[in-house]
Length: 570
Ligand SMILES: [Zn+2]
Image 1 (cartoon, protein in one colour):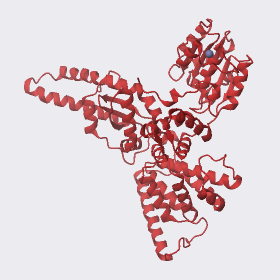
Image 2 (image 1 turned 45 degrees about the horizontal axis):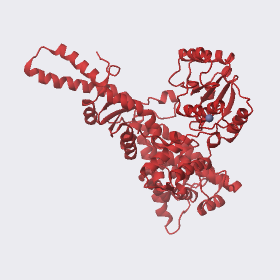
Image 3 (image 1 turned 60 degrees about the horizontal axis):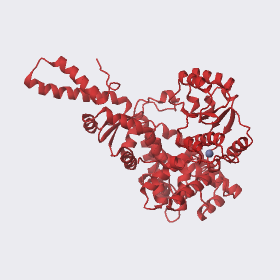
Image 4 (image 1 turned 90 degrees about the vertical axis):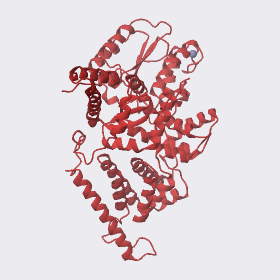
C-alpha cells in the first residue's frame, strides 16, 4: 500500500474535470463527438496544466464504445485499462528518457500494425521537445505518412524547441496557466470528497504559490494535509509555501508609501526571521503591487492574481501614488536579479527597503513620522545607510570583481566569495555505511520527492543529486554552495524530506549536502582515510602488502558506491 500523491489519485478522468482549460477541452470534445479528429496533436503549456491528463482522456474517448458528447464512460474495460496504463494500444512515452532515434524508429515500425484491442492506437509523447534531431526526423516521416487508425499526441512545456516541420503537421492546443479560482475550486472539491475542513484563505495561499500549475497546487495540498489535524489552516500553508500573509505585505508596502524606513526594516526582519523565503517575499511584493495598481484602475476583483480585497487593500489601492507603486515593482525586480547572483539575499532586501522608504525626489529627507525630532530621525537613518554601505563594500571585495552582472555562462562559476564548509564528519559517517542498493533506491524516488516538495523547497532542491547513501544517511550534491547552505539549514525542508522518505522507502535519512565541485575531493579524502586506517592495522601484521591492499581498497570502494562512482585517480 504505497503512498499515492494527490495529483495522481485525483487526476481528472473526464474533460469536464480538467480545470481551467475550457477552450481546449470544448474543442476536443466537439471534434470527438463529430468523429472529426486529426492524426496528430500538439499540447503545449506550462507544467501541471493538464496536458497529459487531457491526452489520456482523449485516448479513452476515442476508443470507448460508450463515449458520449466526447467524454469517455470510464467504466468499460477499454477505459479502465487506459486509466491503469495497461492497454497495449495506448502508448505513453517520456521523451525525456527515451529520446533516441531507435525508440522513434521502433514506433514507426509498430505504428504500422493495426491496434489490437482498441479502435485507435494512440501514442502520447510527453516532453517531446527533448527528442534528438534524428528522432525528430524519424517522427516527421511518420507524421508525413500517418498510418491508419494511429493518433499522436505530443505534449511539451517548450514548444519553441520543436521543429516547425513537426508543428505544422499537428493540430496545436495551448494549455494556459490555471487561474487561482479554478485551482481553488478543484482543491475544494477534493477536500470535500475527503471530508477535510479548510480555511478559505489557506486555499488561496496554495493557489497563489502554485502559480497556475494544478500539480504544484496538489503537491502543496498534500503537504498541508499531512501536517493538518483535519483542518487546513492558513498558518500552516504559509509555512509550507514560505509565503507571507497579505497583512504583512500590506504593512510592508504601506511603510514604503509613507517612507518609514524603520518600520520597513523591522517588518522585513520579522518576515525573514519567521523563516520566509527572501525570493518569495520579492515575488509576493511585486504581485501584490501589481494587484493594487490594477484594482485602483478597474475595481475588478476577478483580475487580481493573489490579493484578497479587504479594507486595507481597498485603502491602499485608493490612496497609493501609482508612481510609487511602479517604483516598488521596479526596485523589487532589480533586487530579484541581484539576489540571483549573490548569497546575500537579505542584504539586498535591506538595501531595497531603504531605497523604497526614501522620498523619491527630494534631497533632504523630510520628517517622516511625528513625535521624533528631525535630528534623531535623520541620524538613525544615516547610521543605517552607512552600515548598509559597509556591508555592500564587504560583499563586493569578497566577490573580487562584481562590477556588472555577467552573462549566465560566465557567472556560473564566480570566484567564490566564501565556500560552503562541508561537514566531513557527517559525510564520512554516511560513507562508512554507504551501499549501492541504498543509493539506487534513493535515486529512484528522487524526482518524485522533489515534485512532492512545496514550491519554495522545490526551488532549492531542483539541482540536487543523491551521490551516496547508507541505510539511514544520504549525501546530496548541489551546483551552488548557497543551495547547500540553504538546504542544510532549512529544517522544514529536512523534515519534509524525512517525512516523504518514511512514507515511500519506510525510513528517514539524515541528509548531508556537498557542493558538486567539492564532492570528488571529499570522496577522495574519505577513501584515503580508509586506506590509512587499514594500513595502520596492516602495519602490525605485514608491511609489504600495500599494493594488493590498494586493490582491495578499490574493490571495497566499488562495493560501497558502485562502479560508476568510483573512478580510480592517479
Ligand atoms: Zn468507456
